Image (tube, rainbow, N blue to C red):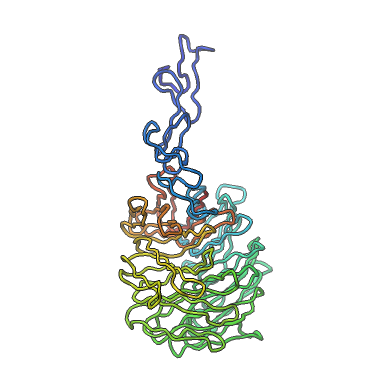
Amino acid sequence: MDPLTSNNHCGATTDCQGSNAGAVCGLGHKCDGAGLCALTCQQGLVECFGSCVDPASNPTFCGAGPSCTGYTTCPGTHACVNGTCKELVGGTGGCLANTKKWLVMPTTSTSPSGELPAWGVAAHQGDEITVVGTLGYSATFLGGTPSEFSLSAANIGEPLVMRLDGNGTILWAVLADNIGARAIDVTALSDGSALVLGAYEGTITFNPGTPNAFTLTSAGGWDVYVGRVDPAGVFTWAKSAGGTDDDYAYRIHAHSDGSFAITGTYELTLVLGPTEPGQIQLASNNTRQAFLARYHASGEVDWAVSMGGPSNFDELLGLRRLADGSIAVSGRYRGTATVDGLNGTGTTVNGPPNDPTALVARYYANGELAWVRTAQRISSGLDVAEAPNGSIVLYVSANSGVVFGAGEPGQTSMPSSGMALAHHAANGMLSSLQYLGLASEAQHMVIAPDGSAVHVGYHIGTASFVDEAGPDTQLVSAGQTDAFFACADTAGQTYWARGGGSVGHDRAQGVALLPGGDLVVAGTFRDSATFDPGTPDVQTLVENGSGNVFVARYEP
């Protein structure tokens, strides 16, 4: 034993007994070679005045180098982001939530051929989180504990709903019984319940194998369902919408009063609230069209409208209930499309016949169309949200030169191909266009109370995120596709960009903000995926099937 380096007898003398035994160096310390216990910091951290700090995020020692040199102490109006002091945009959440609290795979294991992709995530007032996806074959939860349980599904998947507590521990998981059906999106309600949106074919059973079991039957082909699941994981009701052909679901979002809206697509005819007194039927003129429907909190349909034309390329991919009860939607179409509105408020929009055109529209709570704006030759109108100032923000992927706000005073063109946020005032006029950078596929975004935007998706190769304060932030995929999640401030500049993945396909699908400002991201990964590589938050998840869920929580 060398008393100069032994962590158990650091500085020992003579017989190494009693007072001569030396010191036991505690956690985070080591015997430094001179017989003294000294602080030791893990990779990525720096010792500063007796403490290990992260120079990328510590506001007192921001950007510190070896031996704690060259650091900056950020003033109270700034945060340390990637080693640089940046002015805070105010409020909580969003770009301030850049410290990982936990990253989990909710299942202990899946069957070797099993697959469990995640599609949506919702954050509840009680600090709980609901994730929806599709389970193929089987999965075990809380393995090795007294609470261990397993679920089995058909090999091509069945809808899965999971509830996690604020620490990432699974509380419950339930299936709806239908071979091939999907749970596609989810929204939280104020009482801790959640509304789940999905699609199914044939007959679907909710609460299968229990006294509370009940079924829905499709009208033909694929139909849309909405189900309300209570805080204990029991479906209390479910509603169907569909016709004789294939119909599909995209997004759902609830208002504070429990009413909600959904979007999807249908062919030929769509019946909403079938057999109910308020039943509504839409017709698509022999093509596939998009629809928007508003429901009462009890699940009865209130009104519904269509969007589309002859192209069969009409989708409403983004949806948000706004603070005043109105509804914002975003999507895409080709050629000419009719955007319906109640009481004769609809309109027709045009675009090139062979390239997608993005649209963003606002509907009043009574179903009347307030306005619609378009941008031609884009990749997609992906998501929409409301900013704290009441403006409507379109999250879009577009090519270089695409014009937003055509003919308006704020008309602006995309400086390069990539992702952007188009801010529209309450009256629809374009107020600004913020270029975010380039990634392969943008998915969803949320606007935090401070006005910052957190957006998620996936990328192949190198993804670049604009940062005027320094060089652009870049992420490089480990394999085919990697997940990314990034935050842009109110000026559109990147505060941080994170992500990770494996040699296979990995993607971030959903994003939500907890009431306290923490950020939750959910997605799918395969094999062994490493997240936050090259940072102190680095963590690897390993799954044994053909794909599994990851859920991450970040805090200020």
